[in-house]
Length: 226
Image 1 (tube, rainbow, N blue to C red):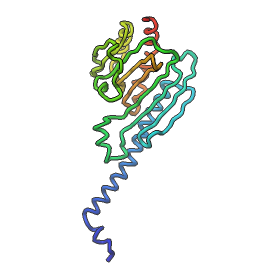
Image 2 (cartoon, rainbow, N blue to C red; image 1 turned 90 degrees about the horizontal axis):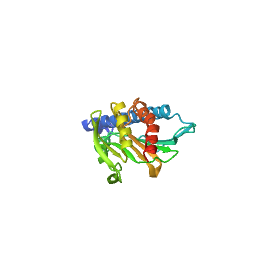
Image 3 (cartoon, one colour; image 1 turned 45 degrees about the horizontal axis):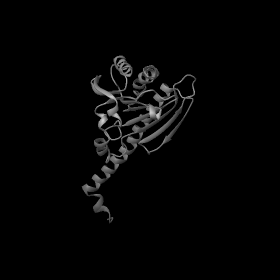
Image 4 (tube, rainbow, N blue to C red; image 1 turned 180 degrees about the vertical axis):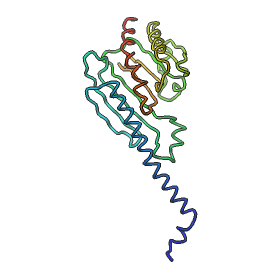
């Protein structure tokens, strides 16, 4: 009789083997799922922005990727788009429940580098997201604000001029729901437009196209208002 036979015949051993197999399965399933989300999101970004060239970098194993999209088209209001996606640790089933409680969802952050600084600052932010660390608007007391309903979600508008408010409201009227969008910010001091989204496979382009098509008219409205 082998010295290990009493161990391998114990129920706890079979539970350990089954648990280890489950974690291994979860690891490979989670990596594939996260890679599919990343690949779909970044493919949609290429469809929307049509960059002249791009670079992609893994920044967090199975949970983080970064992209730099360079735009050299004549007449474009953007020079570059930086995109960072961070995802739930689906490959680690032990940590995944904790991450869902703290982080809640996958995140896609976009920084749109404008060729010329916008004339005003404005924000369109979902009230639920505005409570997260890093999402608060530093000079909100200097901006006019109001809450609106956008496709069943409560959003807060921040703006400086009536013309910018009109452009924001016109965008909302032409876009029946926010889709994946949770925050749009135009910041003159940083010469950027920031967009925060909750990425889902095959849906990033549908939510982003309306914002990208509307942005030039918003910038022109701001210029006329000053």
